[in-house]
Image (cartoon, rainbow, N blue to C red; front, side, top):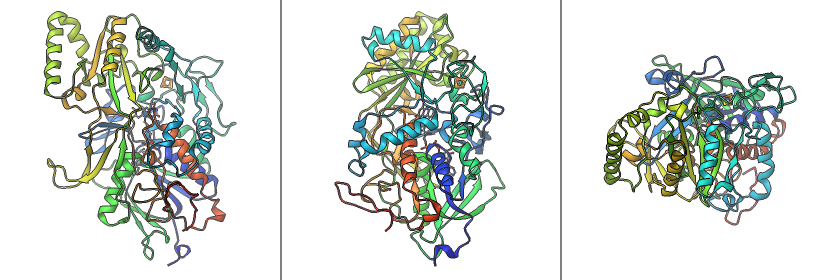
Length: 561
Ligand SMILES: Cc1cc2nc3c(=O)[nH]c(=O)nc-3n(C[C@H](O)[C@H](O)[C@H](O)COP(=O)(O)OP(=O)(O)OC[C@H]3O[C@@H](n4cnc5c(N)ncnc54)[C@H](O)[C@@H]3O)c2cc1C
Ligand code: SF4
């Protein structure tokens, strides 16, 4: 059956409205396509965002428990993964640090040789940076000054830099002042100047953070894209007549926030873009391969999942004269050695819930010995400074006094995700991590945290799950459907087309094929810009776009089969 015989609801359905999904939605509508974006999370505005992290129901995403926020934490054996879930994806909760990785990342991993990345990517980074309003942070708070002093004390002061961020910081005007759209020649919404409240990860209640709903998605909706919030995609299958999807697809959804009446809906489209994030796209594709909806997804699904080798440590500064929550969420960074990058991170005053997960810093290799050492450290500290120790272990006032040191290493390290029944819940399959454990103890980073704490007379701190379970926390999960030359090495080709299917793409962190060593959102945006640049205008589309497996070294990839 020919694709044109069907009455399609949309030309493209985009699954997920994060960085990859928003770029796709805007660029496709600009090219004349009818686009729907299915987004599992809610729509957020300055009026309904939580004031602090104690408003768990507005911060955390666990709809079955009545928590309908925008921040999710998923627990795996190899990592605790933090990610966003909202109209605007991770941009609502992210710290808006937008950094380009070093050029060497294009020469490693399965994407190397598949395109002239070094030549092609700069123009896409440029577009992504313009759209996301990237600028150098000009608001240095007490935490950033402390970071600089600690870097000086550690002999790496020359590496201190102000982060590149997506925040509106006008050259003139006062904090909080509203301006007509400063980014898109009047086509975008009005914006307010940053007030340095440190609340970026709790959602910006001032309209100063350049979240996707204020740029890409805003413009996509203006061009006619339909965004369906609280809509979770549960099935994608080729329409009858062509198992490779050339006759179009059926996309089924349920209401993600409903407990009982789940409002099952069915849509048809000619093409699908998976943009549900690395974790979300892997989860959906594993499920669809297993149920037989998309049986030809590559066996490489779930391979090469990376986390930027992160570790979260920090310092609590009771008695320090200044409120370290002031500033922007991530205002500055330093390199303590060639591979190890540390950023100073904060939550806004009053958002103390994360304080429940922090404890006295403990060195040593993971395992029972480290737990024993941690108990010894806590007991020792209680005996020496009972009041001070109790004070730093209780959460009240945590955000005002705590600087998180986000430590990222640009070292190669990856895990694998499988679709399995865990031993503790054999009734259904879930994503389960496998492979080498990521380091939770980075000795030089711990030394740095101690120097940082000394400057304020405070305590160096660790994350409790890293000590107890040897599981690092990360907000930067990438890979799992990587770009490669063939289905034997990855899930999509150099133009993000899914091997085994026609008119099907993946545009999100899942395609990233190397460890970036920096926060990934700018790269995900730039890659999506590049992928969308290959899609022809609607009037020229033949609806026959399929990937090409090629041998190395990479040859130009053609659009049609
Ligand atoms: C607290 C925090 C701070 C961060 N800070 C930074 C930072 O400063 N800089 C940086 O570069 N990165 C940061 N990140 C990481 C960044 O948010 C992610 O890398 C980025 O959002 C990934 O983009 P994406 O396009 O892959 O998907 P996402 O932005 O994660 O979007 C995917 C969307 O798909 C939706 N979805 C998933 N499954 C389905 C389904 N079945 N049906 C419908 N919708 C679905 C999800 O709800 C989500 O909204 C941070 C993350 C967190 C959690
Ligand atoms: S510091 Fe506050 S005002 Fe500035 S971008 Fe972040 S949340 Fe918005």
